[in-house]
Amino acid sequence: MLNIPANAEWAQQGVTVAGDHGDGNDDNQLSFPIGLFVDDDQTVVIADTWNHRIIQWKKDAKSGQVVAGGKRLGSELNLLYCPTDVLIDKETDSLIICDHGNNRVVRWSRRSDTTQEDILVDNINCHGLAMDDQRYLYISNHVKNEVRRYRIGDQNDTLVAGTLVAGGDGLGNDLNKLDKPTYIFVDRQQTVYVSDSGNKRVMKWTKGAEKGIVVAGYQCIKTDVPQLENPCGLFVDTLGALYVVDSYMNRVMRWPKGATQGTVIVNGYYANGREYKLNKPMGLSFDRHGNLYVVDRNNFRVQRFSLYVQPKVEAPEPVNDQSCVIGQDTQISLEVSEIRKPQVPWYFNNKPLPTNDRFEVAHTEDGTSTLSIRQAEFGDKGVYTARATNAVGEAKAKTTLDIAGIKPTINTNLDATLYATNGETMILKITASGTPKPDIVWIRGNDEIILTDRIKVAKPTGDDDAYTLKSPLWVWVRVFCNLQ
Image (cartoon, rainbow, N blue to C red; front, side):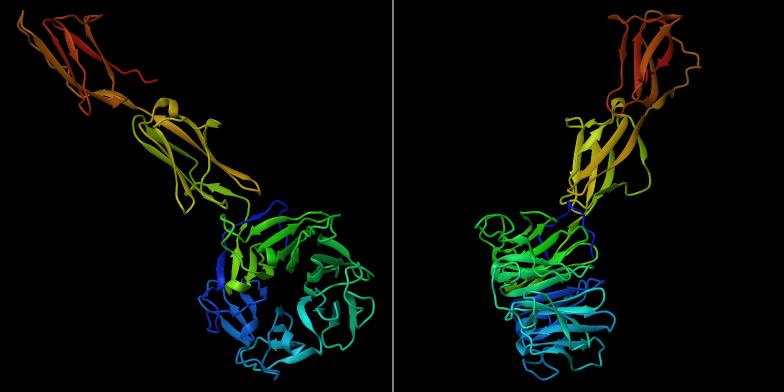
């Protein structure tokens, strides 16, 4: 059984894994599919009902492979007639198929040299199948309104749901009766869950019980309004949460253990309420990663809805700290995954990112979130954090940004002897570099020169590093750069 977090969510836009090329019998088409089974390698095995075949689609395949039936409908041992459900018996590496139109359950080896079936159970109005850990086979009978359990190879069966005696006791909505049971699920305790479609409910039968318990839908709470219109495919996880397709409402619902009301986990309608994402969905299954698979019958396809899991935020490279020179532009990039959209808030020293035109956050479809800082300042030094949150939890990654300066340097030789004519204007020009640009203090003797109308200083602009003093006086110079 699958362990799914109680607060798990799934993508609302499905991905087609089989079909979606219209109604037809080509290898890339389906015709009113009903049941499915998902193998450990995410191969999807489908009961392609109106094509009278079982077809499997490997992960990411563009077309399927017919593995049982498919030539035409018929009752011969190499043919099927409207199969409605299928499962894989790993011990024998075979398919077990509900051959609905032929009123039988058959076994079909998965070996390529097999061309016909073995009949496991005959003369049964079967619809749904399940197998427990002990390889007991469970079959729903929608005419006798019951579910029976069989040991494979044994002609004796044991009634596990519906009536208390073999043969059925008619339909009804009492707790010991069913009305058109379809899909079934069996847990490790051999508890049987049944889609009681005619009663618009899901029933739970514990092993040996004389009557069932309503766990979803009509009569689950005291109301005359049904909460399920047509329950179909179902699944129960290790927490006891029930997942069920509500076919007529084009949705998938989840009912936590003991809940009296379910929640919609996949809504089959688009936002306008008129277009269908799902159109009369039927079968349901999960892969071992928790991704949800739904048979979208009237759209002739199978859809996968990905499970959102614990989000991740991490640096593209294993470097948590970085630095840049003051005044330069810099970027911090982090990779975000497992959230609906690659958009996450950024924080600076545990506070929301400053809102000014020097900070810009960009998100890409591949999940990269990049913070750009224009003309870095010393005040930008600190810890930057990106946080990603979904229904499962939160993740964050931190990067420490250091802002560095360049020590000032005088690039002009000031040791040379300078001569000036008394009364004439003397021009001293030096170049000095550093980041940020140095502040220059001009000195005569031990005193700082006071600027007047006769003594002027020109500072560099742009990329220029030249500092100029115009004065009628003889001076000494020194360079001063204050880095804060």
